[in-house]
Image (cartoon, rainbow, N blue to C red; front, side, top):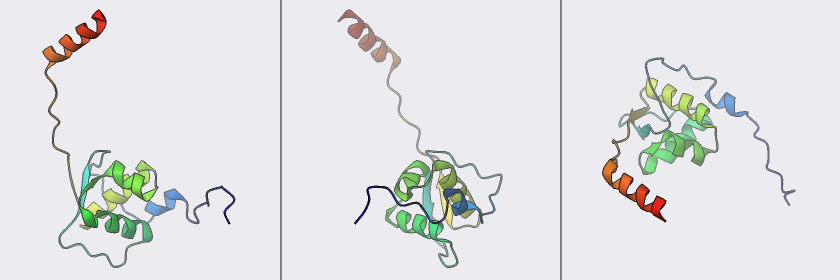
Length: 116
């Protein structure tokens, strides 16, 4: 039986990244794509890092997607990813640039909407 309340975590979110040493030169943003390095060693990782590696087995995800799947705040997952990139477990890359629509078409649509 559950009382309808969510169970509190035994370990607070900020502790998930507490043991990591985060390099300053690694930039991890919300849309940064994360994947597992070919020679990644999964032994000796704490539970959040192990869960992250298991999540990435199916392919790369953005940092925001990882945070959503893990149920951790973005800032914690960002530190977790940066620490794992620093020790060579994960790889990151920026997402491909988006193709933006033509400004003239957007102006035509906007003027059409205003005419309604």
